[in-house]
Length: 296
Image (tube, rainbow, N blue to C red; front, side, top):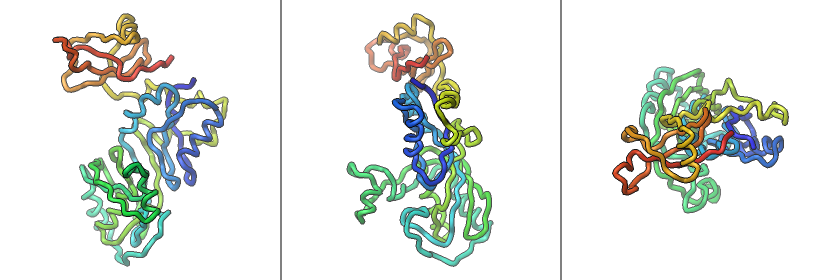
């Protein structure tokens, strides 16, 4: 079984699941997940996760992201991108300094409403399924963080920006909100994800270049990219105890941190967690497996 991460440069025009199907045809029967899909109109970094590494997806998806987004001003789309019906909004042509001022308000912590045409579940149904039927969808605002947002190129109506943001940020919604701020209307006309956590576009491989001979060589080991929590080096006795479902004791664990990475012989053995409410006076010093990995 393969274990590790595969940094794919997803081409525009296919879904993230199309990419997974392509890889499964190369290596049938492998357990494959992902750390965040890209819309068909988007391209760029799509991280596939193989084997035991899939147990770490819940942590990897929380990584920060970086995008290059192409935004068209003067019009708006019901889907906030080029796939929806586009309507002319305004003839207003903001100056570059006006656009810069408009972008500045989005930096930092902001509350963002996800697009109605998204895969977010509403009463067990995906929001876009309800929206396509004409059913009103009210999605709650989410707190996100924009680390930086800057203009790469601006020639009205085309605005190209670079955005570094927290996980959960919808660039489609950001494009729509920029249009509201500039009073021009706007929709997302192109998107490239250039970074997801430690995975960079410059190191990504095209799915068309993968084959049965090089797939394993292209995999990145778990240890290279997983730097989630403080590291604990396990000795052979601790490793055996954990594998038998027992706890281990580590004095002076840092307060406020509940999860740790347990390494044995230079490999990630699993994610460890502090034992809570064990009834022992040393409960703050006890650790057990939260996620056990079987990676050779």
